Amino acid sequence: MCMTRVRPILSFVVFLVIVTVLFYFYISPSSSIARGSGTVLSDNWWEGLNWIKNNTAECATIATYWDPGHFITGIARRPVVFDGASQGATRTLTLPGNATEEEIQAAAVIPQYRAERVRENGTEVTKVTTARIQDIATTLYTADEDTALRILSKYRNPGCDEMYYIASSDLIGKSVWWSYFATWTPVEKGVQYNYAILSLSQQRDIDLNTRLYIYPISTDQSILLVDANSTLTPLFQQGNLAPVRVERIVYFLPDGSGISRDVPDAEVKGLVWVDPSRQVVVFAPPQIADSLFTRLFFMNGQGLEHFQLVGNWGGELKLFRVTFD
Image (cartoon, rainbow, N blue to C red):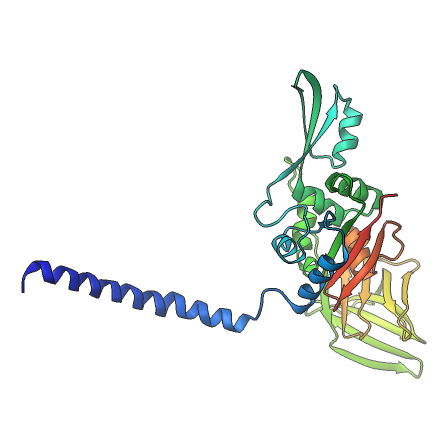
């Protein structure tokens, strides 16, 4: 057989070997994982994003963390602050003239910014730049509603009266990242804070009017709930030591109304949020117990003046209208 005929055959055989290896070691496993993983976008997100598309102004900016940015622009057809392709993007505001340090700080809102005094078209201006990821992380982390509003105002579309903010369940686990970026500095970097999601392990009656619920944190630590005549008191127990009180609790009465209560003389700082079913509690450390995200997601915006709950899809996606007046 001549060499001119052998080479195409050998090339074809090599091609088949490569395709077979790719299929068995890469394509087939990837396909199996994809089939078993379900859709990336849940029904709650799908319904919520379509509601946004049909019920909000086309100019309305949707503010939230970067992860669902492409879904929001692709399905809801609304502009976002940033997305997966622009995590490192910045926001630059132009101030007229040679702005003072106080004016620069007021425009930046957050402590980390870059200011440049330049000339544009023969006019002196001051450009103030902040990182979008740190801006939005700060809105999630801050306990000051006014600070969040001032940051969000930088991202409003000119001439548009509408802006919305998404607090979603995935941001519970991602608190380690938004708290990190909110507290980041070039010198000290960021600090990560997280919520502890705890499941009920056992419950028992102490007397006719009192029931105890136990939610383990580790082998020797637990959050305890004492229900005395429908009034809940949160406790923290470590090992065989006597339980100590936790500072705050949020829970729900049988009629669906929410209760937020401070516990007098509590030894442990932080917040315990109780799911209405009492099957789950969430412990928020004091650094994020009063964060905007905690108040939006776990308390539906209770006590906030400028964030109005307009939609709740399965408890997974909560949409708030932001008012600046």
